[in-house]
Image (cartoon, rainbow, N blue to C red; front, top):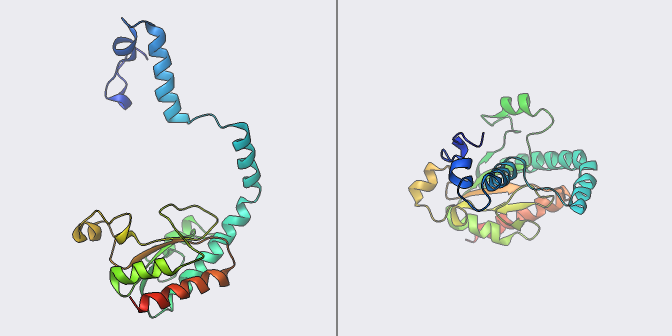
Length: 200
């Protein structure tokens, strides 16, 4: 289909727009189509060492996911009992509006990512995150280590307060990606964060 418009590239016709009249002619159209479409759709080839690392990691993936789920549920339950926490967003809690969907679609656990609203707004959220030592303060998720972020002061800080609220980011919202560390260590670190937030 080198002679037909490609809807994924705004109607580009490879043979007409990139092939005919160029130094390589139709060969260039083929090369570019293969490069831009296949690379986009299939991704790059994985290096042998990276493939080996992935294979090694897959052997213990089920154990790590089980630990992520167990730890996240314990953290969510623990947060629910904290007086400094206004709300907890985690589909594994019976109080969640997504609880039944979580049980239906993820019966073995609803994942390791959760969010909660800390009393005290932006300053309390920032103080909480900055006091943590075990948790890494980063924006990504999907690590074996516990991660934390305060979106209002980081990822969404360029938005106005109204835009943040429209995006679901409240002033005291804290997002956790719960890792596979010992649960007592995770909870002790979070407890230190709450102590710091009280002085903010």
